[in-house]
Image (cartoon, rainbow, N blue to C red):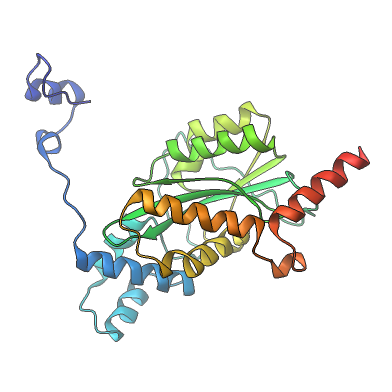
Length: 276
């Protein structure tokens, strides 16, 4: 975008890009230590009570001794990419060119691997700073088929993970996400359409529509992230990678009769191939 070594002065580059000069000269500032403490606690409270909005979270934080207002809570929630989960037609403002797709999983019997994949993004705290985790899960087996970390809420790292999953595990029949702008973007939906995948999106505020990914976030955070103090993105990558390997291959899953997601995923694939 702005190139300071270009022959055109920065002022002229800003004019051509219709960009404010203050934006071009602004320097990124690290998140303060106090905000990081608050963001981690907000994440914990949100995970326990996803229906809590900025006012309720403000009151919960005040009861713990934090001096904080609703606007600051709302600002931190926006930075973390989380919001209260309840029915509200104005929860998020989307780009008018972004189409929202219907939810296709209601009353659908999901009985085999690669029938439905689901994906979502969550916030992960570190010692200094934070990252976002995107994961793609096979619905029937709960197996995580791909994941990525990023320090920004962009679409590119989501697309990279989906491309990896498609290359490694084939093509699902249905792909389900929430209505986040990363997933309604033409780049993301176009990738799924190019592979002939049906697109499904959660109803507004209905976290249960993607409940298995929400439960994955709870496991990742309580069994790995909250027990660590990642001091860098590379450390976070190693820790999350180690845990997801354990989650897929070793950790028994009560909903799967004590089997691991890897065992159930492979069993479903073998059964399908035998039947074919």
